[in-house]
Length: 182
Image (tube, rainbow, N blue to C red; front, side, top):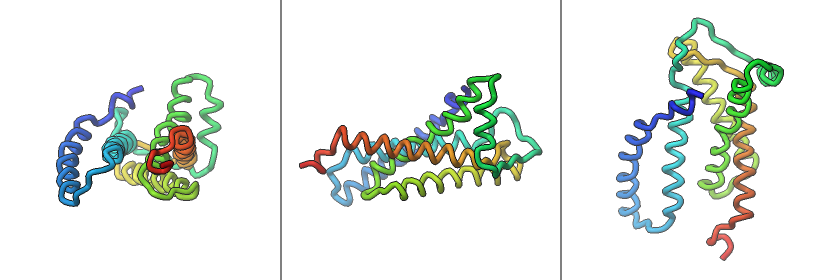
């Protein structure tokens, strides 16, 4: 459970200390007075993106290995963790964790983009997770971190984005936006 303790609070704070005044100046210059909730969503998105990049691309405490692991066989790792009965925590982190961590992307897509389709969210999920997996591969090859490129992570992360999208759609139906209904 070390992952949760490693959220880069200082980095997020520094970014927001810079972002918030700049955004305030921009809003004032362009005479933007509405959408405070949208501004809060941007701030949450910044914190989320920095956290996810920190958790996936920064070196771990386990050290750097000379071995670079690549799995291009769909469901190989997923099946391995499903059938691994020795450490339930490891199963949850690697299966559910890869899904849950990416749920916010689907929600943010609905909140920040004007028109969002399932295809758009699917592509956002696939491209964002492919970027992370590719960067993990490049950084591992160069000895910076010790991670793996795994097609199953792409599958699980993209499922998480889609689940976030579905949660957002349900949320819109349960709590319609005042501007959309009236």
